[in-house]
Structures are given as C-alpha cells and as structure tokens.
Image 1 (tube, rainbow, N blue to C red):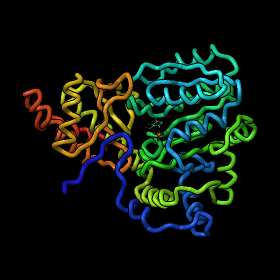
Image 2 (cartoon, protein in one colour):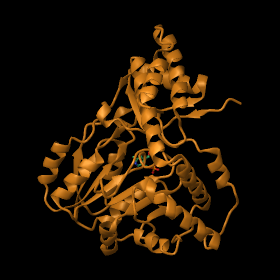
Image 3 (cartoon, rainbow, N blue to C red):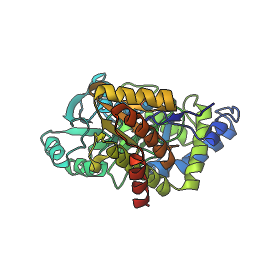
Image 4 (tube, helix red, strand yellow):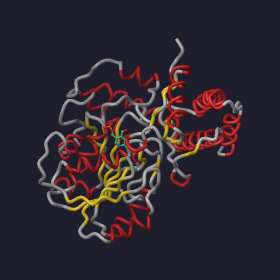
Length: 382
Ligand SMILES: Cc1ncc(COP(=O)(O)O)c(C=O)c1O
C-alpha cells in the first residue's frame, strides 16, 4: 500500500495527469488529431530546449539521439573531440568507435568539471576539428559542465566547428539557450527531467548543423535526421511514433507552462542546495564541488559497506530508490536524483530516512541534523 519513492537519476516518477494523458486512447499517426498534437508540441517545446529551431522526436532511448547527432554531423575521416568525464562520455566514445571518424578524447577526471583553460589549450593543439561533443550533466558523476564557456571556446577555435551537447539529464532541469551557449545541436531523452517514461529521444539543431546534416554522405537510415526534420514541416514523423508518449509529452509541456520554466529551474536548484546541505550534515562527502554541482543529481562518497547498507535499507525499510555508482565509481558513490516530478519535500523524506539509517549504523545521533541543514538551505535560497 505504501507508495514508493523513486529518487534515481532516471527513470523518474511520472505525474498522474501525464499517466492519464498517455492512456487517453490511441490515435492514428497519420490522422489530423496527431497533426494537431504535433503542432501543439512543437509550439511549446522550444522554450524547454532554449531552441528556436524544430525539435525532432525519435522513438528510441537517449543513446539513439547521441548517435544521431554524431552520424549526421560528422563525415567520414573527419576529426572530432569528445569531452569524456564519466560513463556517458564513454558512451560517446563507443559510438564514435563504431564509425569512421578520427577521435580525440579530452579526458576529465570523474567528478570534476571541465577546466576551461586546459580544454582550450587541448583544442588549440589539434587541427581541423569538425565537432566537439560533451555532456551537459554527466549523470554518472553528477557534474554540470560550464557549457556556455565551452561553447565560446569552440567558436573561438573555429566558428564552423560544431558544438554538440548531450542534455539527457539536464534538459528540463536547467536552462539552455542554443545561441547564448554556442550550442549547434542539443539532444535528450524522455525519462529524466522531462517526467516521461523511457522511449523517446529529442534532437534540435541550428541552421549550421542542419546544413552539415544535409550534406553528410555517411550511410544511415533510421537515424537520418533529415527525414525527421522534413516530416516535421508537415507536423509529422517519418516512421510510426510512440503516440502515447507524445500525448504525455503534450501534457508535460502544458504543466511546464503552468509552473513556468524559471520556477521549475529554481525548484531544481533548491533541491540541489537542500540535498547537499543535508548530506554534508550527515558527514557524507560530496563527490562534486559546488561550482560544478548539477541541479538534477547529487553524488556522495563513502566506504563500500556503508553505501551498500544505505542503498539497501532505503529500499527495504522506506521504499526509496536511489542509484549506485557506475563503472569506476561502482561501490564508491551513491547518487540521488532530484529532477522532473520531484520536490523539496522528497529531499526531506530521503534525508530523514538517512538520518535514521546512519544513526543506527554508526551509533551516532544524527536525528534532526540533515533536516535542519536542508530546511535552512531551502529558506536561504528562497
Ligand atoms: C547524460 C546521459 N547521456 C546518455 C544517456 C543514455 O540514455 P539511454 O539510457 O536513454 O539510452 C544517459 C542515461 O542515463 C545519460 O544520463
């Protein structure tokens, strides 16, 4: 009977009205109803992406959008840079390996943000770089990179070098603006801050990127983005779309309109401040320094046995799910998601549970400590 609390950095909880919208009944994807739905979605989605360009929707998970960006924007034998700072930077590397590109990897220590000056020196040491790829939020480490600053460096290097950003755990939880951040292509997936189930992915491109995609001769079919943009001109999709998720998306966008994107972004920042203050009060060490802390996910370090006890007890005693570390951070960190349909009161709930778990596990009284710190952070940032 007791409702579970999903605080993982994706998939995330779905608002009941979105679930309802997704079960309103099927419509044909070549019907006027669907055309109307697509039109409505397109007129509202731009603000979330900070893009005045169309946003293509693919029926696949976030990784497909990463691959779509890469195989549409990079030609055979062209040189690219991948900024790799965690498991999803590695994902970009794996995709690139499957294609005939010259890949330079700018490695960032896991848990750290991109050092702008160092990256600039790295970029300037390479010639003829056609595109730079980076995560906005590297979900595996909970770092939010300084995307606008990286974008400026890319454009200083060569205005025609494209800057492609993976916004999978960031879009909907933190503001974007393609022009202001010098982003040419921004992609994301549905199951994170966008409050939808997994299953659709999004790609928006400015004119420079669209031209590059239309001239690229690299073989591709289902992920040929040109087909999606052409279909969008008729408010349609080239293949059968995930109709119910589109119905849900339409509802999400109307919820966003009601709450207002500024308020949504402020709520994410507030949750980040609360959870960081609360975890610190519990003598848990944060993985990421404040300057690079993501408003959508927070990671904390610890000794493996204690972390494992925390994660299991949260699940068993409280029905709260959080995530462990990935790859080299497995067993070394835990991650708490705070994006999408999550709220400051959820931060209080998980912190109260942590107080109790750690009080018993460490035999040290933490009752009230994390809640006090989190509520002070909440009120300070109002
Ligand atoms: C930053 C980032 N990029 C890419 C992905 C891959 O998305 P998917 O698992 O939907 O393919 C994820 C998934 O967690 C992610 O967090």
